[in-house]
Length: 332
Image (cartoon, rainbow, N blue to C red; front, side):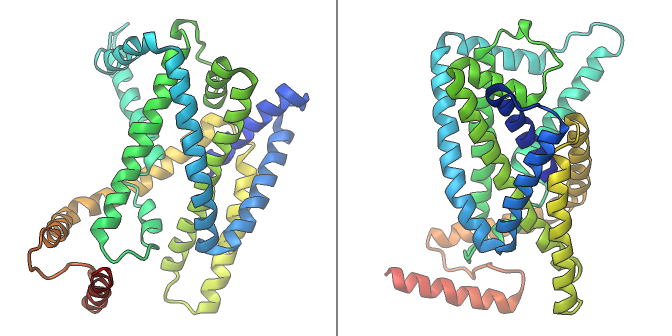
């Protein structure tokens, strides 16, 4: 996941540097950008979850608001073609015309594959990754934290991604586009077409910020996974292994800046699939329990006198019950 993000950062900044500062848009430039990104990430990663949370809480609202404002302005500039763009989305999604034998099935398979892969990459729904960050919260109500997870998927996919699609479809004549342009270059072209040099600079800020927050978040996910895998070892051994992971992670940030875009996406899709399959099996198996916990939460909100379901462990459930009871007393 972090490899793709670094790759997009290096591609975007290398393109901007070549445009405005005549810096060669080559592998060496991308590697230097990757090294800088890795160095900044290392400083934040060493600081742990507190520093990661502090950095992301500052960057995410800023970059999201800036992107939404620019996207809405761009769509407003081409408002007359919005109905056509929406129609194009639905017509292409449900109308596959066979050019030759087997083309229809192949096209449908590609749409499903790319759609699922990019959707999972966008919101991480079903991977079991973002729950690691949610588990670091101090909320005693699992359903309340889960609802924030649902909101994340809605905001990231239905708001950010829909605005991106509409901005792109209303800006360009799709018949004039070539298929050999990389995704980062296409997105930058979308901003520069609408806003000129300001759009290029704005995109060169927005995309790296979006990508960088993902990089540092995934470092925390990896660290927690390492701690879980080696939880039965001594603190010293586990600390050494975790440190080695952080070093390897930072090095791979720099290296991934130079990998070809198609290859880094293929690697990411493969490993996301390997995470999703076992996690989705567990989600199906636990769906009944999730329904019970959710019902329990809303029953209590409606004033029913039912035993709270706050943890799978009885001792922690009692502890959390005392915590929420104390919070209720303080609020009253």
